[in-house]
View (cartoon, rainbow, N blue to C red):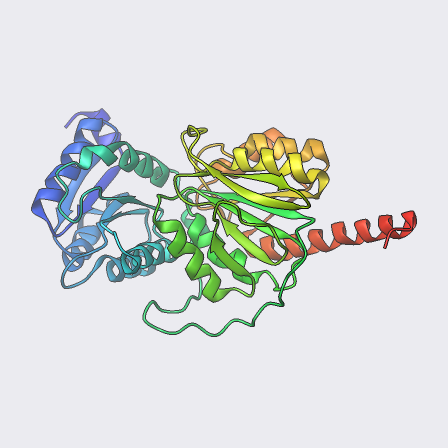
Length: 373
């Protein structure tokens, strides 16, 4: 083995299919960016190999016999924490939920198998797998901690019913996130109160099909109503709108209301939905009443949008380096636009509440001064 090969990040490939193990291994070797130090056929085998080989990164199949991917991930993150990229064949809601749970438990990212558990066309997602592994090499393990969440088979505690909202949104909060985002959103969104005086719009880079399950999981745990956005939705306070995977989300005036517009325009920065697309639209319609929040993620989506928020007089919150799983998006936003607050993940929701209340108070004083009702 050449010295260059030895310096490449080491990967353990875990899958119950020998065919898939070979496909993934061959893809990584051909890339020249990673070296495969071993393979494992199930979770028990994976744990033995991790202790013996100490790979930098693990690719882990979600569905395996004996010890499945979710159980294996739990052992890895509690005993020998390291970046883990999940391979998911999910095509139904239960499969989507298991994959999302893996992200909440600490997996850095996942790649969706295009044709079921044994895929003959893994090359279709080869670029996505390599991108996920690149993200794994810069993952901040210090930012990973368990989030108390209901088990997948258990009923979640009933969230208080939010008050019926009839007024249109006068303030919006746009949250942008990518790698590590489902985990971050699972902490931020449930911590927001039911009477939040703003509509919340979320761009999470995730494949189509998973956003509805993510929205449902967040809705169960939250006082706010959380839904995957639908074309034509009217923005109202106390609601969270999650951009569907694979579609850009923008805003459009419709009489006295502001509505969601979904489209299939080309990706921006290689992603769709794009936070920059949404932020540009939100600033156009809400001006200084538009707030931007950038959480963990690879790349620079959201940076230009945050610059527009700053120029319009809106406020900007950026997750700090220490609690970001990947610091790419927050760092790019800081470089492009600065921030009003740089906060750890646990402080994001309280900061949103504080700044929304402050903005609402300023607006109320302005209306009183002008004699408006």
